Structure formats: C-alpha cells, structure tokens
Image 1 (tube, rainbow over the protein chains, first blue to last red):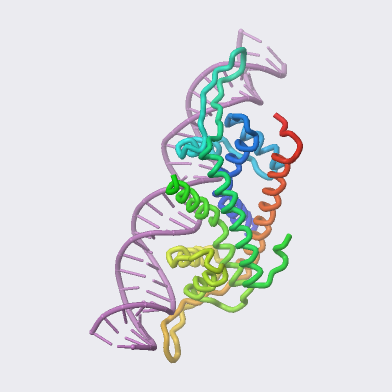
Image 2 (spheres, rainbow over the protein chains, first blue to last red):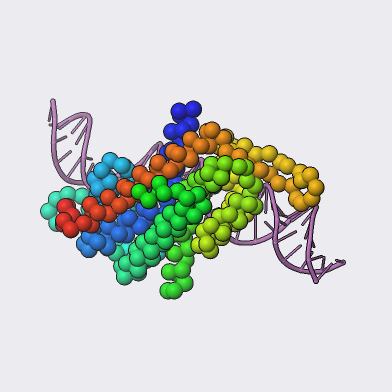
Length: 129
Length: 129
DNA sequence: CATATTTATATAGCGTTGCTACATATGGGG
DNA sequence: CCCCATATGTAGCAACGCTATATAAATATG
C-alpha cells in the first residue's frame, strides 16, 4: 500500500518532468551564454534544484544528443591544454534560442490553462499558490 | 523552418501533458463527486479547456482503463432503461482520492521548484561556476 | 605503488503515455 | 435510407526519463 503509493508518486514525478528537461537545459545554455559540457550541466541542475532532483547521466547525455540532432545546440570536443579530461562542450544556436522561447510560451499557456481549467471546472482557489 | 518550429511546439505540448491528464481526470471525478462516463469526460475537458485542448478518445479511454487497473477508479457498465446508448460509468475510489492528492502535491512541488530553479539559476546574481 | 574515487561521456533497453488510425455499434434527424 | 452524433475500444507509433552498464583518464588515499 505504502509501496504502491510511493511508486505512484515516483511515476507522477517522472512523467511530469517529461518535456521540461530539454527546456531547462536549453534555458541554462541560453542564459549562461557560454558553452557548457554535460557533466557541468548535471551538477548545475543538481545544485540549483537543491536536492529536489538528481539528474542522471543517462538522462542528460541523450537529451543533449537529441538537441543537437534538432539543431538547437552545437557541440565541440575539446582536449585540455594542460590537464584534466576531454570534454564535449555545447553551445546554443539561434534555432535553439527560438525553441527555448517557444517552449516557455507553451509552458506558460499550459500553466495558465491548467489554473483556469481547475478554477472554472471546480472553483478551486487553492491552485493560486 | 516554420514547419520544424510547429513540430517542436506540438511535441513540447504533447510531452508536457504527460502526467497531467490522469491527474485532471481523477480530479474531475473527485470534485464532481458523481460518476462520469468516458465521452462525458472528453466533452467536459474540451469545453472547460475552452478550445485549448481537444482530448481524443484514443487518449482518454486508455487512461480510464489504466486508472481502473491501478484501483483508482471503479467502472460499471449500464444499459439505459428507456433509450440511449450503453455507457461505462466511472467512480473514484478512496485510493484514487489519495492518488489525486499525491499527484497535486507533486505538481505543486514541481512548480515551486521550477520557479525557484529559474530564479536561482538566472537571477540577478551571476551564476557561479 | 596500488587502490579507490571522481570526473567525463556514452548507449542499449525498459516502461509509460499521448496520440493516430481504425473498428464497432446504436440513436436520431432529414 | 443516409448521415451525423454518441459511445467505447484497441493496435501500434514515437518520444523520453531512467536503469544499468561500459569505458577511460585524472586525482585522491592508503
């Protein structure tokens, strides 16, 4: 029972993240301005979400590849000059910037829609945070 | 160009809905109190979202089946006494009510987290390494 | 020196889900 | 009778978050 509830919670959490992660990463690249590499993004998300979320490598690296396939980021493999491991740096493209804005616009519409939906259908004020 | 942007928009829209639809439907059943049938739910969502979303039968019916598999709703096939088509009526269970609250709690956490994430990562202060 | 941990990237495969497309069937209006 | 609305359902696709696992070099620890 408790277990099933936990599973449900985890599943809800997981499914709710879908569609947001790409947006978050594109956003990070856009606002940061500079190029970032995968491991750096993983750590940034972990730190900035303050323990709310532990992004996994198997989640982030595929996202970055997909974003590159779509032309939203461009990557560049760099060998360190003095020491350290090689890194693949990602940089957002103009298309990526546009995609970020599109995604945010969709997100906002959905949130507004969700609140209005709840309000209209059920008169829930609770939702207004 | 325009096409690709449209595809991206549609994909974002689609992915963002994941994890919300079950919650919406459970919520509708919970707040409505009474039992509802699939077609009714589809129409209610269409009307109440005011054209923002056109829920499809192929989306809603499978959701209802899954919710029943999880024990969050119970269904009952009813033949009309006088006239009209037979309908499968759904009613939320105590487990479903708990699941609704769980999902809403997760949703709120995620929204708050998202806002804080954006503020912290991209606020006035320069982002640290 | 040897070992363990951290840094860094990558992919195969799983499960869930929203959606398209299609199938089936009844009721009512013209 | 024909057409649309009503009403339910499933097969199959595509996307994506995640687990598990692999690889390899750098760095820390004993």
